[in-house]
Length: 246
Image 1 (tube, rainbow, N blue to C red):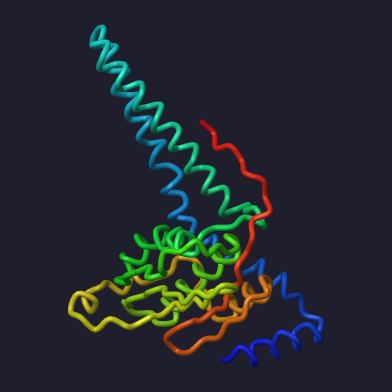
Image 2: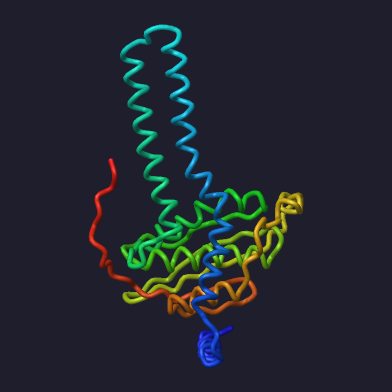
């Protein structure tokens, strides 16, 4: 589907009285449901480490007064883990309730999605790669997150077999052309993946979900059988800088 075809479809939908935002909200919910296991894991992993360290310290205290230097080192480690847990929880909360005008460097934003999805994709026999070049080019964090995550998930769901997925980009002064490509794997390791591991858990995401998100963010895109290409404009941050919690 070309950009022009996509634009015509948008106009027809609006003329028929449909509600594109409702479709986008459903797509965002679908993306978050698919990301939920990874988000939950990221939120609890540091908290579990804090709990385990607290149990170790408690056991040492029960056995007698621990070495002061070791005790201080353990307390400092627990404090560091607690701070990391707070920061991770804030990042997870930002996926659920994002700041609409927050920006992110293009490669960093793609990294957010790739890092979050990599483990679940590995279980499906899929590989993920971020080949977006390093640059200072900034885009809307909300738009990039939703569209990249939805594109990766929809392409993998459509393939329904182990695949290699890669994100690339060509950057110009005013916008970036981002390409998400999916290539079916044919190696022996891929063929050995259990079909059960390929199940999505929640509903599959499809092209209509990606379209709805792009429409809501006013981003042009088109799709072929193996890739989704989107044109993302540069965004200038307007939100005041915030102090991170200690």
